[in-house]
Amino acid sequence: MLDSYLDGELEASKLIDIDEHVSACEGCREEVQLLRAMRGSLKRVVRGSAPSGLRDRIGNAMMGERAREEARAAESDAFALMGPGMNLGSWRTLVPLATAAAIALMWGAATRGVQPPTNETHAGFGDDLLAELVAEHSQPLPPEATNAQAVRGLERWVGVPVRPGSFERAGARLVGGRVVRLHSERAAMLQYIVGSGEDARRVSVIIYDAQKIQVGTANLAPRAVGTAEVRVGREKGYSVAATQRAGEGYLVASDMGPDQTAQLAAMVYDDR
Image (cartoon, rainbow, N blue to C red; front, side, top):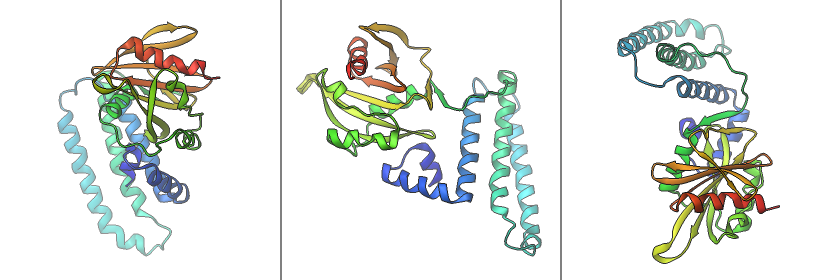
């Protein structure tokens, strides 16, 4: 279930169970770290068109890995004689991942040149996070918390205050909320309805710890809404807005226009 765990496809209760298991299980923790490292490398370096010959290099790497795996299988009995302390499972996971990472880095070097190392310690998602927000908004899952008190309780999993009333003052009606996974971090996703009948419009708000998650807003235009600093734009046909306040990050996607979406995002500045 680790792939689904890292993709944030599990319910909050299952995420919590796996979090607890991974913290206590060295083998699973090692695999999670490797998977995250590989995914992060792919996101950073696999950009643009693939260079010629990439298919052949991937095929050669896979063939080489198969040969190494067969050799390891032949030697497994010998390793078994060395006692239970020798763990081949970790290396069988590590080598394919290292091969994939090396191919990704080779692709990145061919398309962009070698990138310098970074000392960033937070999770940087760039514009990918906006795409994730819109994907969640366009096909929302049912909320797990369906009243204001339960939604506020999501704070314990997110690490920053979750204030559903901030947006209700603008006429939005709370539908509910749930915990979502943004790669390796947790965030709260709140769902609202604005208007009624044929005029009803949906609004989705992601609340996250801005100290841990960095959102790329280069494609969003800055806009002043009163004393609030909001960035606004469109993503796949939906209006999106982003803002921060005191270490709390807010991303808003809606079926409304950019002006109304920006006004909603700015409501967090009035919630003192």
